[in-house]
Amino acid sequence: MSNARFHLIVALGLGALLSLELALHYAPVPPGLSRAALLVLAAVGFVAVVTFHMHLSHEPRGLKLLFALPFVFPLGFGAAIVLEAWLRRAVVP
Amino acid sequence: MSRERVTTLPSGKLGMWIFLVTDAMSFAGLLTAYGALRARAASWPEATSWLNLPLAAALTFVLLGSSVTMALAADRAIMGRGARRWVLVTVLLGALFLSGQIVEYVGLARRGIGFSDGQAASTYYACTGWHALHLLAGLIYLSVVAVRRRGIETAALFWQFLDAVWIAIFTLVYLV
Image (cartoon, rainbow over all chains, first blue to last red; front, top):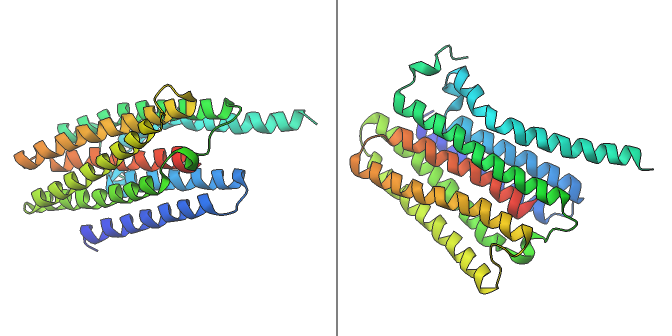
């Protein structure tokens, strides 16, 4: 497959992902579930652009680890919010 | 898995990746602050009640398109011909995105929603404004690259990164 066609397919996939996000936003889905799905889709979109358009997958392992560093804190923070909500629900009857 | 070492990368490309890592920290910090404030807030206005979601969605697709044209420019740069045309198309699409962002800001300003009008407005302007400033810098960068016809692959990394970050901002600020 040519590079141009590959990038076009990636972009079409991202377009479909964003359309799915918009559909999910308007769909009558419980807010918690909708938010979780939207966050997962956004993460998939972000990783797809970095991996396929920026070709991070072809770069040395050291660079991949370096690029992952800035996202450790936000991910940890997100996990802390979920954990706190879960603990609060577990403690309060 | 690639056994290549980071230090063997071309200096321009390595420099851009290091810059993107530091830049990712600024965006991660802003979005984390947004998440922290929103998680602690007693109430948070629904984005569709005060932001123009159809416009933002259309602009998101424009930016996705610019991502393809920039990838095509990088490919053509490797082949050694026809890259400049695609860089200029990317600049046009980027300028369209930025114009749409300005339309959104003007609409908000007309309704009296400024930077200091609550946490939702402050965080919205901070996240999208920081991204818009990067996009403006990207437009200048790409214009220079188009004229010099050098460094297109490195410039493509910066542009694609802005596209990736916008997907996160659009989802968090407009949809979640």
